[in-house]
Length: 345
Image 1 (cartoon, rainbow, N blue to C red):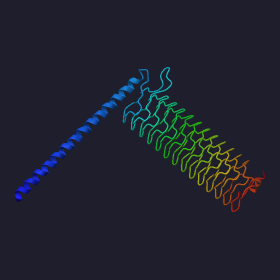
Image 2: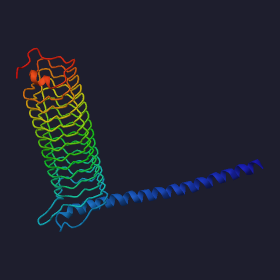
Image 3: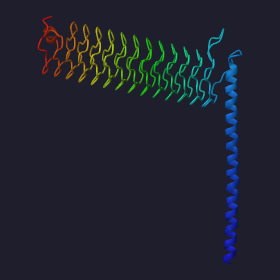
Image 4: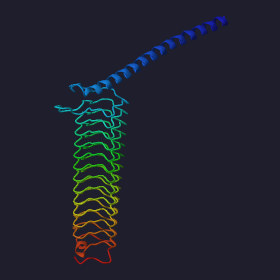
């Protein structure tokens, strides 16, 4: 009886294992077929893209899968008598290489381009709203008038990119690198730039209002006549930055580093500069009315011609600053360390 039970057990185990092997084999075959099919489809799409430039350029590649595709140097932009470049909207381009590609007026709306390479690409007037470009590399890319509204550019590298008049409204740029990028007259309203590095970037006349730039690095950046109204700059580094004529009304700059920065004729109306370091900053002609500068460091700062009416300088350090008694009389200076040589006018 015991031997019969053991034999039945062995038969049952063999039966179950046989079924499992059949199922596994079926799944493996399906997976293999799918993988080969995807690779074949990807290769076919790449060849179709390569041929696209020589056709009437009307074919759409919307929603195609081109992950890790090598598309370097391809001309996917506007041809003669064409109003738009290739349509790759909502395509999967993760880890694809589009370095040096021509993408003028191409459409990448909603595309997944995480970790894509776009170094040196010509992307003028390309359309990338809400595209995922997380971790992408766009060094030295030509991006004039590109539309990146609400795009995900977290940890992306846009160093030395040329993005004049670009639209980066409400884009996510946390941790991104934009060092020495040309963003003149760009629209960056409401963007998220926490911990981003814009050292040496050119932001002349750029709209950066209502952005979050906490702990961003803007050292030696050029922000002449830029609009930073209501922007959050807490803990940001603006050492040696050029902010001449910039608008920083209602900006939050607590604990910001502005030492040696140029803020001539800048508007800092109602700005919060509590605990900020403005040592040796150039503030001639600046509007600091009703600003908060409690405990701020203004050692050696040049405040000649600046308006301090209603400003709060309580506990501030102004040793060596160039400021007149008339200016100080218009502000609250209780507990402040005043310069030994106060200007008569």
